Length: 502
Image (cartoon, rainbow, N blue to C red):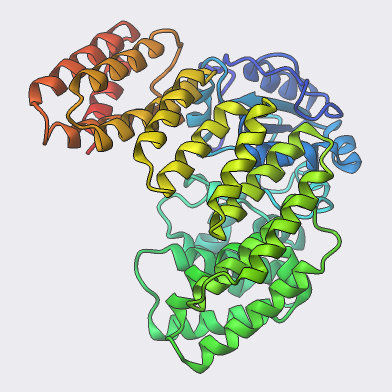
């Protein structure tokens, strides 16, 4: 893993997408990823790699904010900046080698190809140039820091603590942790941060609490008590709450029920503190339009934790906030990000008709339609109209462009067919075979997100075969094998694994 990426020797031939539309101020490297790492080694510059997709709302949020930030743009001049679109040829194989799981992912590498760190989305813009500075200062990679702290008892420098605190642990894919438990590692790190680094301590503590909430095993009594104290300290600080924006917005209904009892003094205290933190964020003038809408989503999560419905006055306030945010849009990338946030907010507040109207308006404007079709499918399913949902899944699949997106959208469609129309064997076989025909046009279709999408396909098909004729599944698997065979032995082994998905 030391030289994580002998990408120069691996099949790293995915072309880098044109810089147009992906942050025009950043001078994206025009060649392949392999060539970019060769250039980095030659020039001694570290690599800044952005992995994304044109339809992805959080990616568009980055393009509308971070990639237009002058300080960040200037700092990237000291790197070899690479944009890798997940739909380009062999991109998913590269993504698998990098260990990236979702869009967007921001990564920094040494000139020799060793991963230094991964940057999370949603940070204050002034923090990103600081993280680039750490890479330029040849700070030790996060994976090395974790081993040094946990195995060798070595204390990091203040700069290294900063990098650990602002590492994208959720997108790590096990690169820095190996087999270690995420919650356990984050607890150790947050406990060891020096007292003179309160922001870093709060950041790691928030990430520990998030991992604790997501962990399958519920916290014990002592663990829950410790979590209550950590959360109280974090919410008591306006600065800490702003610095952990995503945590404060998304975690109340997940975390509070896990660490407190209903009606307890601790729960009442934390609910009051969380509400105050959300109120302060609502007043924060530094938030962008999508983030301002997200604060309302946090308030809805808070109401859910309290066992309350969204009141009519809040729904009205949400409608006004959505209208105001949409009226000021001038940038295409920001438009996608804001409308996605607005849609989610209207849906979460029970205003489904307005959510559908918003997306239909975006569809009419031709804005990101291949993604909005999936959104309309989700909305129809939420409304209980299964036939309409299936219709939109079909349209999304037919309209999708890009190799990996076509497979991903197709996996959603096949899953819906097997669940909603399990007796329509002919249609399920037809769509499955058509999906496999798309694989034949690609260079490495059995990797990364595409592999996971195909696993979802066969998970759905294997379940469907329990109520349909096994002969139909055998026919589909035969078609899949015929697609896999020309790719060689290694691909065939992957295909066999994919077909066993259950």
